[in-house]
Structures are given as C-alpha cells and as structure tokens.
Length: 300
Ligand code: SF4
Image (cartoon, rainbow, N blue to C red; front, side, top):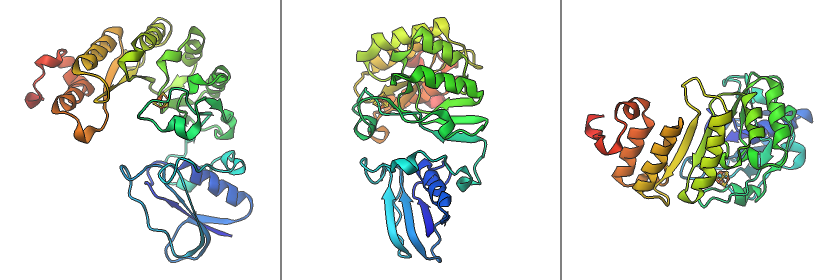
C-alpha cells in the first residue's frame, strides 16, 4: 500500500501518532511518505492534536482511496489500535528535527479531573502505566515525556527508576503533581537528569496539599542551575482573585521557587491580570520590582 501522512497542526513538533503509524506501515512493507497533492494513495492519515483555537483544519485530500482522521483535534474518542500504539515511533519521519530526542507516554489518565482539562475525559480517571521506557526510547540523549500525571500512577516508582537508569536528560513536559511528592519519589527525581522541573498551583482549595509537597521538595530535592527549586505555574483568571494570585506568587518566591503566571482565557482576561503576567514572568522585572503594587507597566 502507498500511505500518505498529513500533520494538520505543524511540522515543528513531532506528531507521535503519525510516527507510530509510519513505523507500523513500514514494518508490514508499505510505502510511507508525507502526503503529496500530485501522488495517488491507498490510504491517507490526517492527524490533528489541537482544535480550532490553535490550528486550522486541512481539507480532505481527493487523491486517496481511504482517509483516516485521528487525534484530539478531531475527537476525544479516537485512539490507535494496540498494535500501532506500542510501536517504536519512526523518529526519522521528522528528519529535519533534532534526532537525539525520544517522545512518549509511560502513563495515561489522571484522577484530578480539573475543569479546564480534557485528560480525564479522554484518558480516564486513573493514571495507568501504558509502556516501559524501552518502548519509545532507543538510547537518545533526551527524553520528552508527555504523561499528564506520572506521579499518580501506582507504578511510578519503577518508571522513575527506568528514567534514572537511562542517564538521558528528561523533560516532564506536562509538569509533576506537587500534591503527590513523597520522600521516596523525590529521592528518585534527584537521580534523574531533569531539564527543568515544574509544578502547578492552580486553585486556592489545594493550598495545603501543594504547600506540603513543595516544602518536602525544598527539604529533599535539588536546586536547579538558576539557584531555585523549580518553576510553579500559577493559574489566574479562572477561579482566583488578585489577592489569591499575589498570595501564591509571593509564597512561592519566599519558598525558593519561580512562580510563572498562566492566564485562563487570555483574550478576555482583565488588564490587571495581563500586567501581573508581564511583571511575574519576566525574571528581570520580577527581581527589580518585587512588589506588584509598585510595578508600573508603562515603565517596563
Ligand atoms: S492534574 Fe493536570 S492532567 Fe490532571 S486533570 Fe488537572 S490539569 Fe489535567
């Protein structure tokens, strides 16, 4: 079969599903290539991770006998069949991107069910192990993990050991759940070459649990090359007041973390919240003027 692949979103971040589909079809002797309008295909795969907010859909090709559409940009329900899901991704498909990085999920699902997140609906209310590291890592120098909540998985200790043994630099792209930090998992995190650790403090209702975890990390974890304990995302414009926002920012700074303001529904956010983001997320400004109430956005 001749297979044409279409990455609807962009070509600057590899599409994991397409890399697995490519690996699968090549393994059964099919010819796989990026879709070309002048060729004829037995099957074309269109994969889309983002919805209309972040990407523009492509028209369906008319030079393919069969079209298969998949990804969260089309529906939360479609998943790869097991045979393809567990293939080693064909990293060479994105040959123009650095080839020293492996991408994948060790776990899927999350028990938190945050109102603004699709993970629980799409992947389930439990964090379940779905792969060992060797399924998508073949000795690359870097690993980008896409797991939504690795620490919520009952087998996360074993998975953290696999990451530590790899010796690769690990990027937990979706962050780690501070509420689930323990002395045992922090000690394993210390033995992993972590690119940049980050946590989140989204709601005031989780203050006690987040602070307990973050304190434990300052007692047992490592400082990073910037001299702090990591970045903590502070969600604003969702269900917190400016007073709540400042409380979280100042508390995190006093504990030795770098707060980083995230804005929910940014196009409709009040100006004060956007100023808060500009002040907090620019390290130079944040250091030069530690008091937000004295920050004048006109003077940078
Ligand atoms: S903890 Fe993270 S992954 Fe889990 S539901 Fe909330 S935002 Fe989504």
